[in-house]
Structures are given as structure tokens and as C-alpha cells.
Image 1 (cartoon, rainbow, N blue to C red):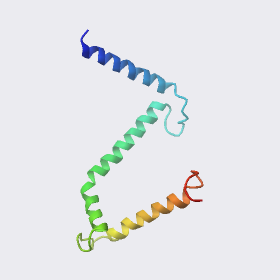
Image 2 (image 1 turned 30 degrees about the vertical axis):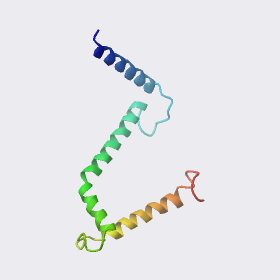
Image 3 (image 1 turned 120 degrees about the vertical axis):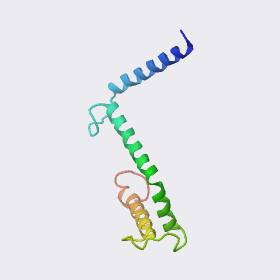
Image 4 (image 1 turned 180 degrees about the vertical axis):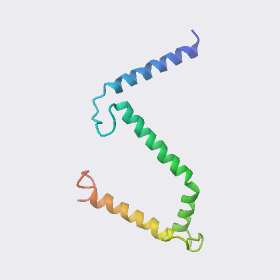
Length: 112
């Protein structure tokens, strides 16, 4: 048997063992899917979709970052409802509020 075939068989056997473990998993994923493997596959799909969206929006996000953190007048946002600077700092402030005020009752870390 060629070395490549034995490596492929070893990988296939390992993947099959992992799939069997996931089929009989004791994880409580009733909210996500009927089986653990589908829940993990769905999570991976969501991560890829989010990263793909960020990748596609990278030029726009770069220009928003320049408008928010760069010197005034570098990016023209006169035709927008809210300036880029106000939008970014409002988003950061709201996220900080949610982490510091709303999360401690759910997760026991951070200030109470």
C-alpha cells in the first residue's frame, strides 16, 4: 500500500470516529438542531458568513474608520444621516453599556 493511501485511510478513520462521537454526543443542543453535528456545522456556517461579510465590507469599514478616527474633513460624510464619528462612538458606547450593565446578571464576571 502506498504511503499516501495509508495516510488517507488513517484520516478517514479518525474523521469517522469523530462523527460517531458527535452522533452520540451528550450536549444539550435542543435549541439549535436535532444532532450535535448539525449544530456545529451551523455554527461554522454562521462564522464563515460573518467573516465573509466583513471581508466584503472591508473597504467601506476602512473609510468609516478613517472618518471616525482620522482628522476632520478626511472623509466626506455630509450626505449620511449621522456622521461616522458619532455612529462609531455611539456603537462603542452602547456595546460597553451592554457588557458592563446588562451582562453581570447573566454571567458572573465584571462589576456588579
